[in-house]
Length: 119
Image (cartoon, rainbow, N blue to C red):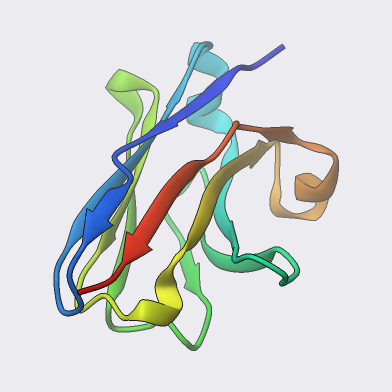
């Protein structure tokens, strides 16, 4: 059982930056694909970014060029660096991990961290 804990959320002004962290309880995390999803009030959860165990990344079109996903396996942690934040980025951000991208929907989830972009 892999436990995921997200952190780093908060209130930021438009144009600002935040870095989210997803820390895992098990070292096997380093072999897993990891993704970030987000869910805004009244909306469905949507994909934000993913990274494979080999470091291949993928981004949703609406965050490409503004967000960067990375991983530091020595700390069992995946990061989401968010820049040029917009009010529409406001959501609860969730970390998702699974042995590979094909099994993400059946993988592990964290409890989420709130990101609010507002002036």
